[in-house]
Length: 299
Image (cartoon, rainbow, N blue to C red; front, side, top):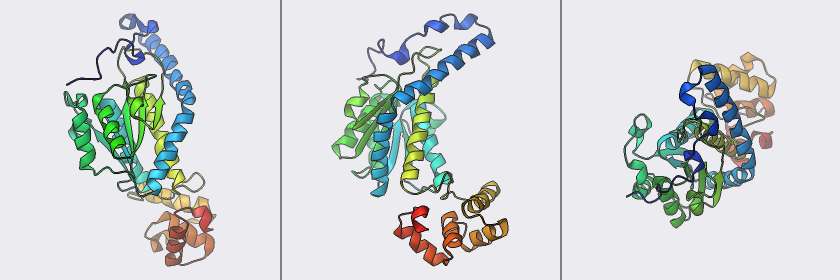
């Protein structure tokens, strides 16, 4: 039963944009210029929310340090963006299940909408239980409207079990925010196509998720300088990148970088610590463990 989707007239994400009342009669170039102007509002809106984004990242870092996870959960575009960010963490930061994404209707909903799935709070609870959500986790519920029952149900349940609760919405004073320990609300104004929240709202959400995942991984030692030293070299392009990362980090030549990567079975972190400190692979492993993954502390 829909409980949070009524009375949407006051939502900024559902209001009409006065610049595009004649969208269907515009030339393509005029449409694109207006769309580009409107997209620029996203950056300013996110800037206003940086203090809340910072607080949310403090929670996600705490979760990861306590063997918890970042669990993105949402419906439709919001859910897809969460999954996209989670999936990209695997090759970039060698995550396993530290960052996961859940979408109303399950994985099949990623490519085709599942009607009615977003209207169920209970479905969110079921999905969180399937991944054994617990008090160490940070649950990040994403909903452009801030009124999606699936997202609200996720935070209600997360709060019950004392998990960390973060809400991301694109309307101020949203319903979702009531259940969040930290509420990120970004208002970039009405869409050029009324109610199409895959546009500015979706862009806002993507940029916020970029911030959460990247800053969280920096916070747990998966970055050295600005290099992705926990990357998995799973194809030829990434093997070449791994060599460049080792060379950039240590000043060694390609021959040394490749030889050390081969010894470390392409653990970039181990290779860097081995070269910079002159230790064996086993000693490098121990240094990394002792220093909780932070290369700078190892050297």
